[in-house]
Image (cartoon, rainbow, N blue to C red; front, side):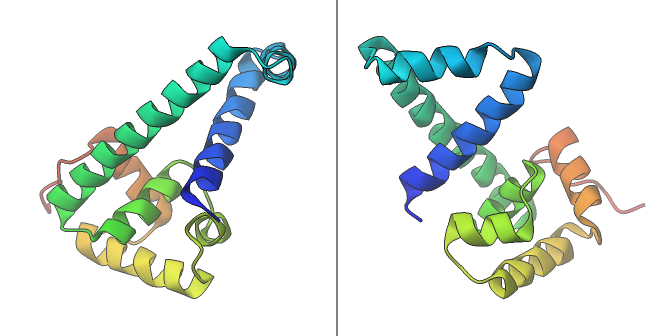
Length: 133
């Protein structure tokens, strides 16, 4: 899967989540894209660039705060955003066993033992390791 395909997949997941709040949005966007609306195409490209930049910043925060490798940070971000190990495997083009190895390393470096703890920690305090109590 290319980087563009992975980004498109994440955009689609986010659009689907948004459509639960605003059910009319997906048919309207689909119609605009099919009509070749250049403004909408430019908007989609801008959104893709912004998402790529934001993900890079989040990954950098994780690497700096907890000493995660680039791949460990990518896996952690996908898990935080609701992906499964299988989703990560497909998105990153690696075996599920490799993803599990990265997850174990993330747990070890952050001092967490469950995916829910990791997600909660990183969503509520990105880039700030908590002290051991």
